[in-house]
Image 1 (cartoon, one colour):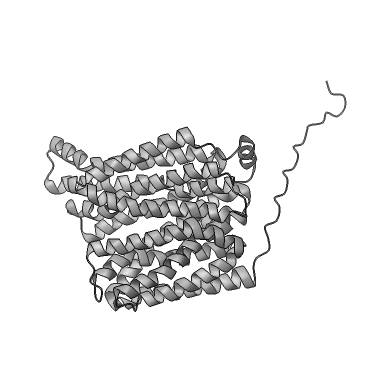
Image 2 (cartoon, helix red, strand yellow):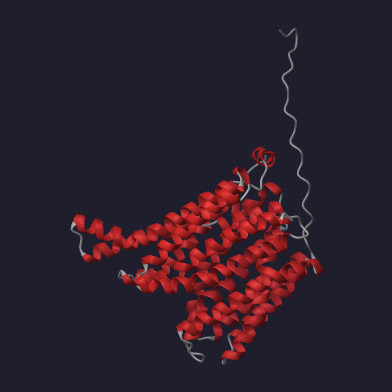
Length: 434
């Protein structure tokens, strides 16, 4: 593993996620400040994930063709533009509204339109996590790939820990300030990638990929991937694991504020920070050691079982100390499973498909971040605090069964070697050429 390349990628993801975390907690307040209903505020949050569902596989496939570095730079540039639009939304609305003599309601609608545009731009170009994972795949081998991908997960977690705290502090100066700072961080990130991150795909590899058959960028490609041997079961695991974990993430704040815990927003933030630190420890340090001792499919099975138990217990927790204890196996299982799924995916596809496959995996995860809050909110509102945890626990029990049956007990056959391209025919002159 080329460690000199892992540090720049770690910093790229950390800065990127810190910028994202700066404004993530403020998006609903942004929307409500301009007259949006709770439903519209939820749509604004979901618009990013929905756009990423479309953009991530395209960016991944483009990185297979044109190289990781230029696509990574393009995605970071889009993120910077999205954050800048977010910060300028009020100014744009006020300026255009004053020039056209618009009503306050019309100005607020215009501002909301700019906010949606900013989040969609960021979502469409925000698939750089999958590109970074493809980069790690390029510079690692199969024995230490999980450790490299775990470092990406650790950077992801650290960015989410630092970002919201800094964003909350800056928000006292106005909601636009965190957006401007996030845009500046993205610009700094773009400069760092340009100066210090070398390309991981050689010209020879890009030429080989260009000559190979490239899957289309459409939903049919995603459906076909679910049917592929070895890839399909992993995508099923990714979807159901994503649903369970996204439900926990999206519903936890509402759960913590209600009976029986009745935590303050600050207390909820502390618990989520605690979970973030646990995830960083697991993905940054434990993954590499565990994958040297145990097979990745075994780790997937154990992690799914741990998550099934801890998520089910989460639904029945009534005290804060017990909640903190339950968060340990939940963070351990989630951190291991999230990393190992992508590590195994990179080993069951051809090299020219790595970026696109990780992009599809990111799309699947994005789709769960759209669906899980809707389902979890309904369960919490209709059946109480027990329902989201119990539902998530049942999902993870199904994931454990899926891993055992499809990946351990009856695994699909290994990937066949890619056939060499047929030699080009050279025209032969018959009957007296000149």
